[in-house]
Length: 82
Image 1 (cartoon, rainbow, N blue to C red):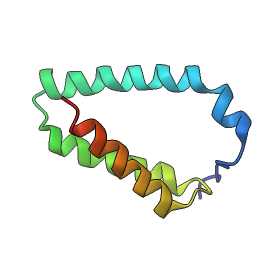
Image 2 (image 1 turned 135 degrees about the vertical axis):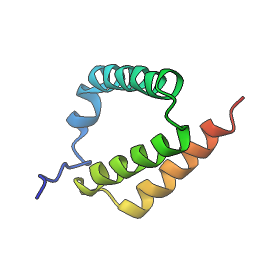
Image 3 (image 1 turned 180 degrees about the vertical axis):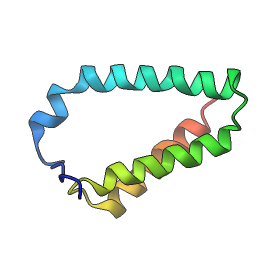
Image 4 (image 1 turned 60 degrees about the vertical axis):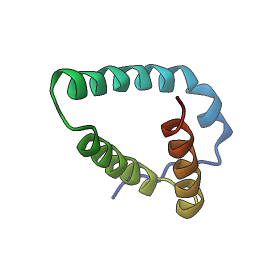
């Protein structure tokens, strides 16, 4: 069983911004390598990443339905950006 991460902890939200940005930069590089150099179909990678996000969400006390709706809006907004 995973430890539940409280999404209500304001310190958690503010104090880790730099670490989150750094982790996203590493993830961007890994995705680039897999898709452009490794010939991994983007659809397969996106499904795997969504599965992982669901696993992370399960470890929190957040409202899963509300977060899922917000994630869907964010994904759609950035997917349609040109």
